[in-house]
Image (cartoon, rainbow, N blue to C red; front, side, top):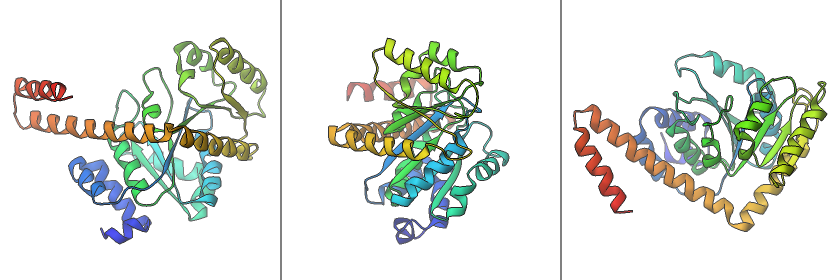
Length: 287
């Protein structure tokens, strides 16, 4: 891969680099380290399966791409060897695909408990260094443990929809805490207003102030409102220093993931567990 092609955001070169990120973490870190740091923002989109996240991202990514270079990472919880999920993303993101300005990539979660594989953190860093100013990460489904998206993102949109059936369970499980902005999608369906009111009640009880926006991702209704809220939130976080905190957190997690991968590789080569634990303890002592 030509370094200049990567720096210019050449889609074919970036796609090849993302394949390296998914297949060889050591090579990935070396590749990322060879590229200069750039300013970029990560927008996490998560929520119930069937809430219309992909079609919402379809509209939202076009809005971001009008301002600057944009990439979408769609996290597939199934096997990376199945092609169906990627095809589905392309179909649901038809506007983004047709724009010719947005890189869309499907990545496997590889069964990670937190919902995101370690390679996603590297992929985000790579895209940022290749000049993608806005990186939208969509996760499929959400559960009590699936909060990695918070550690990855500068801002998180929690998408809910009426009639899905698990929004109350999500509220009880504490999943509501991960959202910075709440979107009630499918606003044309009966129950959307009631769901928005329930979310407001839960937030009020927790004394948490959050924006709630109702959208229709099939027609694009109110997506511009969501986009403006996201831009405003990113600007506020930039001024307060929270964006830099997010970037530092991503760097630390990526380094920990690299160390963990190296230890797993050592164990697979026959290094005894006792020696690995001794190495881990030394790392703890060193801070």
